[in-house]
Amino acid sequence: MKNDLRQHEKEYRNLIENANSIILRIGSTGKILYMNPFGQAFFGFAQEEIIGKNIRGTILPEMESSGRDMSNLMVAISKDPAQYETHDNENLRKDGSRVWVLWTNRAVLDEKGEVAEILCIGTDVTLHKEAEKQDHRSREILEEKVRQRTRELQKVNEDLLFEIVERKIAEEALRESETRYRSIVEDAVEGIFQTTAEGTYTLANNAITRMLGYDSPEEFMSVASNMEELLFADPRQRLAFRNMLKANGRVKGFETQYVKKDGGRVWVCLNVRAVHDDRGNYLFYEGTVEDISSRKTDEVMDGITRALCTAIEVRDPYTAGHQERVTELAVAIAKEMHFTDDHLNAVRIAAMLHDIGKIYVPAEFLSRPGMISENELNILRDHTEAGYGILKGIAFDYPVADIIVQHHERMNGSGYPRGLSGDQILLEARIIGVADVVESMGSHRPYRPSLGIEKALEEIRENRGTLYDATVVDVCLKLFTQQGYRLDT
Image 1 (spheres, rainbow, N blue to C red):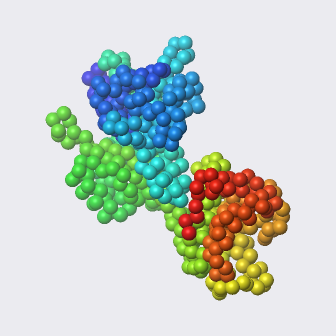
Image 2: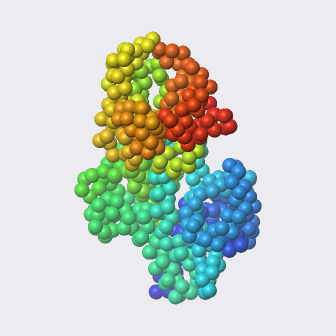
Image 3: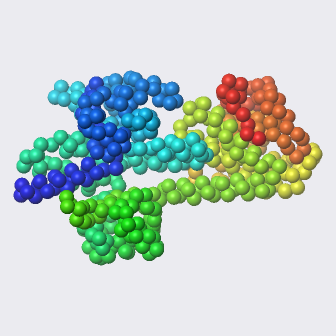
């Protein structure tokens, strides 16, 4: 039995030490007590170079590139670990380059109940941060989803990981470690599995069976010896996956559709590698599978939003780019007002679609040079209610349809279509309303040339608190006059 326990310990320790996450133990003063091989490779340090060093000045900079002071971060985490259970910050590599890491922290208390050590599990989110800079219009949808899934994965029994790393090789300790490692695998939110070279499953945790609609791992593995072949919805995808695995010994980030027990389909992301013994002989394949259906749905929704925006601009070619410029300005204002990521995404989507109702306005009204008649103006104003009708049935996380129908309302009740005033108007609609006025006056229209940005800022300044929300106006003026914001016309 002792040999069995040692074998289990070795297998589970190998699973942890080969995890694609940074595992770090630090003392209450910031001294690095342990860093797993993945973390050493990620930051570029050998074990003897990093163990015993203070986290400050090695992997934690004194100040982030954004100017945020990081010198007191460790003190703050030690005093109140619960407040920093999950956070992201900029970190340093040995070569001086900077990366972003999403950390989950768990305090380890001594016998007196005081913080003795802190267990940290980190995931590289640098690519997400770079994507945010390159395309902020799509980042907001994806980022929270990624963070949510990362948080779920990282909450899997961090205290057990700490115990396993430090466990002495003894019979009782081996038994406890084996139990703890099994618990990590079985209770993980992300699917964990092992297969033979032919694709027969020899291990599957509860997460993967729930994901695919089976009652238990035993049922899942007993259905058929060629279960992997049955899982792939597209046989060509399975062939491509197998060829990559055979050629490289590992596959990372492979996205495909699996077939569930009831015949339904689910989008998954696979990470698989071959495991060998000390002599290099193949043993089995092990990997993880993540349900990415929500992200795929978000990508489809984002594509639909962009398609609708394109349709609007085709109908109204003289205002091509208007929606993008209004969106950029509205999101910039909302950021200055400290909106959350989800809230920013609501502003972004509503701003991109704020003129969707123009699809119902005759094209000749939209592109005709010169002034339009009162009757034509009334028809044009109907685009807000038309936009509401188009979008009210879509289950957005925020009331996008209501924001759109209100973006021409004014604080004193003189707007349209419903004559709302003050706090009756959603804050998001007030932001888009100001951005719309500034962009419209600062850009060319079929019936007039651009009035210039100074004229636009004068308009919102003079009607601050009367037509336009005072706080929104102040933030908008600050962007242009103090922060150098410009409309990209």
